[in-house]
Image (cartoon, rainbow, N blue to C red; front, top):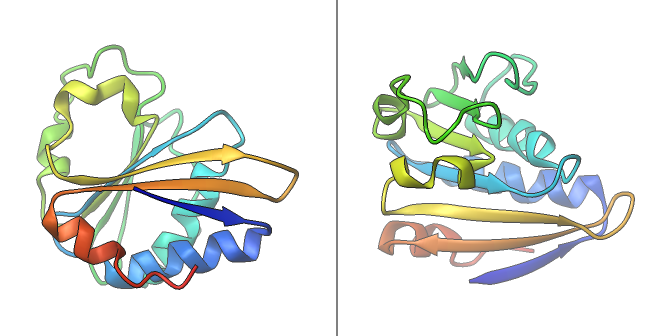
Length: 148
């Protein structure tokens, strides 16, 4: 596990863009943290790194939004699901694109065993603490050499 201290929104975006550049087919990123921690802001930067040109916003009321980039981006917000309601999330978690799942702790039972688990903690108005836990060899390699 690695901890990164971000003191500005720009640093958060830089980290997210870099991870987006490194994204691979079938990748799963889980984002957990309190309301307002920066999960959607992170996803916007990640999408930019994937080459997504559309405006990325929270899929809170739609559960999932799909964006076209170098790889398809499946942006999920599962806050309103109970116990991983059977709505076919597994198809996207094991799909041809990249899944970014906000509030993933709520569907822990359907998450793939290998993923990049990120917890974001708000430490100030624009500052955040990121805990990155790469689970699986592919994710360990993904995180090696991050420039933060």
